[in-house]
Length: 192
Image (cartoon, rainbow, N blue to C red):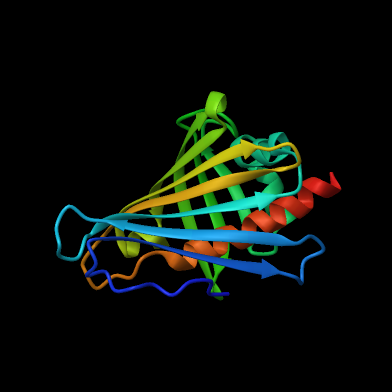
């Protein structure tokens, strides 16, 4: 599912916002996808970030627990995630290293990450150590921040990256993957 059209990167700063409804899911979702490309120069930037914010129906504490310390539930929640393994440390400690195997756009990929957990701000940062994303990006970092609301909550997702060269596209396929993944996590948390 492609939820955005990316404008030319020749613009110095811009923000695109698109909303879509997923009426196929038992719960209605509104996804506001904001994309910001920031550059210090008027030419094409190699370092940038993508941002999106998603609302969910389940408890913010449950969703935060799954993404911060219970990643082993994600493979049960989503058909696109095949396996999550701890390589160093454990499931919840800052500095732990995990390996994910998942399918994005029909291709099986891996992502080896180093985790930073900030429980006070309900924030999890995943820094890529190895994986398919590093075939295109020199650096790649995913930041999740859960925001509780009176009913359910939202999660702000930021992907910070540096392209290997100016011909590399922004990692929108990973934003699409994350949007769908959080829908699956929300549905799983509501059943639990």
